[in-house]
Image 1 (tube, rainbow, N blue to C red):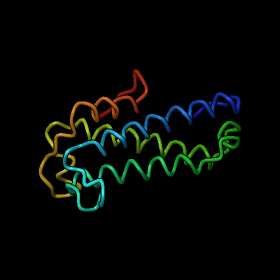
Image 2 (cartoon, helix red, strand yellow):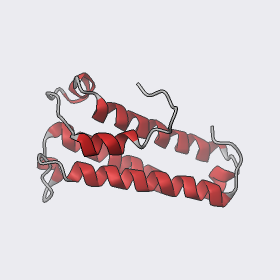
Image 3 (cartoon, rainbow, N blue to C red):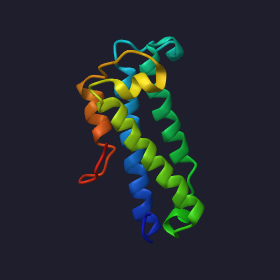
Image 4 (tube, one colour):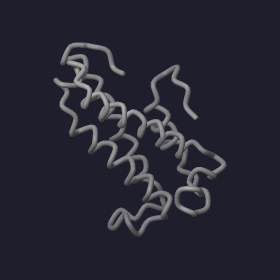
Length: 131
């Protein structure tokens, strides 16, 4: 759980995570298998991942930062859900075997590319154990 902190510090943490999610979304949208006109017509694994990251960013935008900084249990739960989703995004994108995506979508492995992998890895705090 996040510890009690100032609104400014928490706002900076949330803004940083939002920027990292934005960067990952841009990297996913740049993938050659992404249909930018109609994303649902993209490779199924790519669309699923892109949509998951989009929803993660949306969930982050709904969190009341003042309540999060004040250790409100609901805000903390929402934030930890976003952190978990960000970590799962990294695990999906960095899974070179493709087994995780295959279990989720039934689709064959997709190489998300080095840019998306780097952007996904940036979502996980340094020193955190992931997958």
